[in-house]
Each structure stands twice: as C-alpha cells, then as structure tokens.
Image (cartoon, rainbow, N blue to C red; front, top):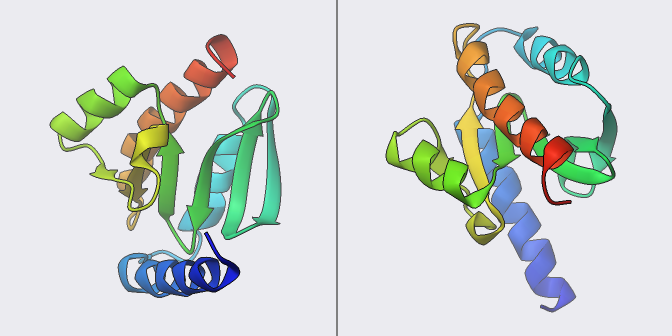
Length: 130
C-alpha cells in the first residue's frame, strides 16, 4: 500500500470513528481504560499509530480504542465467529481476518459486555498464541 492510501484510510477511519463513537458519559472511556489496566500484565500505549489507546499483554496488542468507546478487540478465531454470530459485536472494518471485532461502548451499561469481550481477548493472548 502506498503512503497516499494509508493517509486516506486513516482519514476515513477517523471520520467513521467520530460518527459512531458518541459516548453519553464523559467518564466512560476513563472507566473502561481503568478496568482494562486492572487485567494482569496489561500495559497501555497512548497515541500508538491510529489508536488513541492501545493495550498490550506479552508484547502483543490485544485491543485498542479509537475515539470515545470505539473498541477494536482481537479474539481467537472461534471466539470471533461466536461473538459475531451472537450479535455481541460487529465485524471490524479493516482487519477482521486478524480476529478483530468492534464494540461501541456508549453507556455505562455497555461496560460489562465490553469487558466480557476484552477478557476473552486478554485470556487468549495471555494463555495462547502470541
């Protein structure tokens, strides 16, 4: 891919994120970050590429957040298939082949469902393939 396409993709993803990531509670993203950071051996890198907050375990990025509450979560393929089938998340727009799904946390009530997916990813990368 050329640099022009990457810039175009970044601009398109940024506009998409602005449209879908309207969080109703200003503290929601901070609460989500804190819950993720309480998982074992998790580190965070802010402003990692196009991701505002990227979360790593064992050197592997297992999820990231674009904007407020737009979570891209990398799952094991079987978990990805199940979660999409059950309607618990949406397919990731750019990297579904890597196991990513998208979950938008807009309300406080969404945090439990978000953390269920995030824990599945964390467990996979803590105990499984890196």
